[in-house]
Image (cartoon, rainbow, N blue to C red; front, side, top):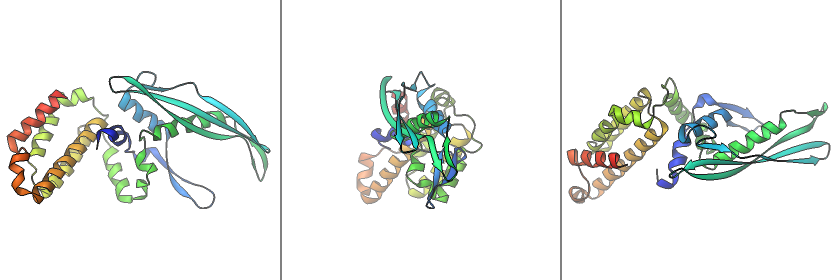
Length: 251
């Protein structure tokens, strides 16, 4: 995880319980995310709607299309990031106010609401909300099982402050520093994945943990390629643990 994709990586993992399968004419099938899940993910990361994130006044456009009438919506989504500076993104959605099928014309009194929801969720895609679904990862049964395990029966996520007070984060980093082979790291990764779920780690902590495990994996690979450089370039044992703890406290 790089700094540029930090938000994307945190918001881009989806609970399969909040998705649904759909099919369209022509045989196309896919997975859709329930909009309320997207709104919850934004709330978890940025705070309550209207405080940490929100939606500006939507703009609607009604377009006649023969006997049918279409409605389009443009929505501006804002969120506070980087010292609470407000950022914003746009999305466009649409629906049919009046549609036509083999039975004739029909109206939809929720078309404006659907177009608005479509616009908001399309905007949220731009910062990574539900990215795993949109990137087709839900076509991989193994990935879906991993996400099911990660989100099922998990307690409500704890705040970062509470997790720091419990001391589990220092234990994580101390044990990570002791992983000097890929075999040890793989065992560590699986053990802490389960522990993070059981202890209610929030999305930010999970993403940071994945980032640090990947960094340690890269250090191990470099050590395998250039073993003579390791003592001079990579801390070990207590020294590594202290450097992690100091960096964590400073952050």
